[in-house]
Image 1 (cartoon, rainbow, N blue to C red):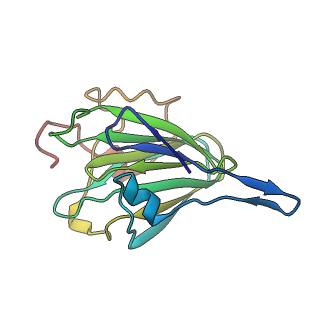
Image 2 (cartoon, rainbow, N blue to C red; image 1 turned 90 degrees about the horizontal axis):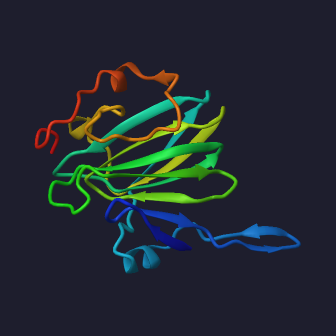
Length: 180
């Protein structure tokens, strides 16, 4: 695996190193020892799948608040998405900065999003499926979110979303210190 840092402190794009032969391809997508060596979460007690039928579907920007903030390891297993990490950690040197990566099921790359960062994505084609590994279990009363189009962040989405859930459309704009 190759770990490439992003504009958000602690967020990494992770590319697999494929081994190809007559049988096909093999690649390691996760190793607890390697993740620990990079200072990343290496225990994932919960995994989720997100299926998205249409191009232009937006999900986000979501995070889980203290005392159980969650790191996420996100991978597209089918299709392509514009995946975003947004730093909401006031003590971080990249506070309110964002980083994006195109996750591609054929490329098998992943995005590691540290705890304290919001996450969201926009599907770039029909029929996208994502697989999430979560460093904490879901706690409904700690589930938070901020507006994907908040000018405070200036996220440069590749195009305007076509489908946004009522919940995500109703999220408030960010006010420093109110979402921790």
